[in-house]
Structures are given as structure tokens and as C-alpha cells.
Image (cartoon, rainbow, N blue to C red):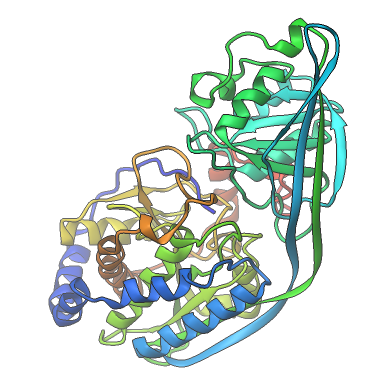
Length: 491
């Protein structure tokens, strides 16, 4: 899970820049070894060879063992695996069947490939398709979705923030839609996946379909020609077959189950045993339809590689390094971690979700001036570009901490394209990974951790009212409420 970055200008503190340069010199032997280290590639191979790492599955359990072994080899102390209960979702078959009148009046039926979206309940619905374009609240408000199946793109318009799948689904169902179809905006016959809710069964059936299938669906849908139905999503402009002739009926069926399950957090430690701690996180689970190499194999590989550097660093406070489970189905591992820790002792959180995939690092500061300043200092000291975005969002493992006031950095990387790319599709495979990015980002993350942990670096708690204002300024409130993510009491 992630939000698209928008770069924010931050001025680097000269004293902080000099601190980072000094640490870089101190850590030069460890950083130099990282430059040519073959372990990140071997770790990614072990992880992706497992197959499905879906939360609550046997594959995720095996992945936790791989992470724990890697933590041990990195030199972390006190490595342990902590299990927690969760609702495990298992995918079955999905069917999307359209029946449309032909020229001679006889009905013709077509069936399209579709995959269920995690936490979709099992069941079937029938109704007309309605094209809601990109699926933004404004577009859904413009369409009559009552008792219809909403068809929405995986991307969002340029010039605004990225609207998450959960927001689109929640808003469409609240507006009266009986089902939801999520259309990939990229070529390649790749139906997308992604959870509909945080950790519990959703209120309506939903599937993902490829861009190529989506082009057909928009032809048959009411309201063709929305933002997501233009040339970028392969649809039509201004009208559809459904508006000019007899309506097409869609039948959407999903087989799926949600049962009690178990996931795990893997925890190790670097640095001294101090009361004040810093958390370094990355999730190791992945969706069941692919290898999860980019999302988030690269992220957890970056953290494992960072850990090797940190074990040789003279850290002023302890760092807890955590491989987090069940992120893809609702940040469940991070939520459990935040509930069990004394957060008054946690100076800050660095969440590696998206780093290591592409060339340039992106630092999402989540309304923390401290976090933004840490990233800017490391960027200036190393002459490495790190784009800084100050806006908060609730769609990755920093959120359980941020909403409780803990300063956080989420480390992502920029592909230059809008959206997930190969992520959450069958194509998220190890061949897409350039492990040079993993190694380089691990070196930067080690310096980010050291600077965040510095005694000269004050890290005040986030003010709740300021955080609410920042989310509202970024136009998150409507979508978060639709996705049932707006915290109780935040009025």
C-alpha cells in the first residue's frame, strides 16, 4: 500500500548535513561492502521462490522464517517471531458474465477473466454496469450507481492526490452500488488485486479486471466516457452502447472465504538497550497472485541489508527492526505492534514500503517536520536525490503510529509513472528487480536511521489537530470516511 508522492521543498540544516557526512565516513567499510553485497539478491530469491505470501497463509509463515533467518545473519540480537490472530481471506473463482441484446434481438452472453479482490465476500449480484471513470467521489456523485455494478480505473487524474482503491470501493458502495469492478490502467492482460477493507470482510462483491477487459466493459456500461474511460483507460468518449440501445446485464460472482487465521511480526534489535527506541519496519507479506518481488520484497530486502550496516554503527539509541506481517490486508501487523508497544518510548518510525524498486528514493514525511528534515539532510550530505513529500496518508504501515502522534518516514521510490506499475498483478516477479537499487537504498536508509536517532535531532509528537488539518487539506477525509478509516472522535 502507498500514496503517490508530491515533492516538497525542505531546506537542509548545515549541522545535520555535517553529522551525516561524519557517520558516512565512520560507516565507510560497511557501506562499501553493501555496494557489492550479493545477499540482497539471494534473500529476494529465497522469498519470492515461496510463491504466495498472502496474509495468514502457509506461505506467509514460511516467509517469516526466511526473514528471521536473514535478521540473524545480519547480526541483529534477540530475534523473535510474534504471532497474532487475524481474519484470513482465501481466494476462490470469480466470474464476470455479460448478457447483451444483439442486432437481431437475440441475447448474447460473454464471459471475461476476473479475480476477486481480498475481503470480497462470496456471492453473486446482477445489474447494469456503470462507468464511474477514475472512481473519485466527484465522478461517482455524477453517476447513478444505485443497484448497479461500478466500474472504476486503478489510476486517478493528474494534478491531484492518488485516490486509493479502498476509497473508491467504499464510496461507490455507500452510494448504492451492489458490486465493484477495478480496471487496470496498464496494458498486458493483468487484472489487479488489492484489499477492499482493513482486516474484515467487505460489504459487497468486487473483482479486478485487465485494461483490455475494461475497454469492453466501458463499451457496455451506462455513463461511458468518464475520466477513467477516456483514452488512458481504453474506453469511449461521450456515451456508450448501453445508453443508445437496450441495457446490458452483468452477473458478477465471487467464491471466497474469510476464516480465523494467524500472521506474524519478526523482530530483531540493533544498537544499545535504551528506553528510547527507533522503529525500522517493512512488510514481507504479498498478494497471492504473484511473487511479490517489488511489493514488498524489495522493501524487506532493503531493511535486511540496512540491518547489516546498523549492526556496525555506533547508535545513540536502540533500533527495533521489524518484518511486519499482514500489511496488504489492512496494516494488521503494524497495528498489533503499535498496540503492544509503549509509544512514549518510540522516537520515530521509518517504514520501508516501496524503496528498492526504482532508482530515486522518495521520503513521505507524514506531517512531521522532523522526518522531512532528516531526509533532506541525508540527501544533501550524500548528493543523492530524495524527493520529500510532507502530506500524510493512511495506506501503509506508518499509519497506526502516525495517527497516535509518532513522527514517521515512509520510504518509497519513484518509477516516473502514476500508479503501482507491476505491483498487485501477476507480473510482480523477481525479474523486475534491479538489486542495485536495493543495495543503494539500504545504504541511504542506514544513514536516515542514524540521523533520526541522533540526540541532536528533536522529534516532537504530531499534534492531532494539525494532522487532521493536513489530511483535510489533502482532501482525504471524504475517502477515508467511505473506507471506514477516519478515526473515531476525529470531528
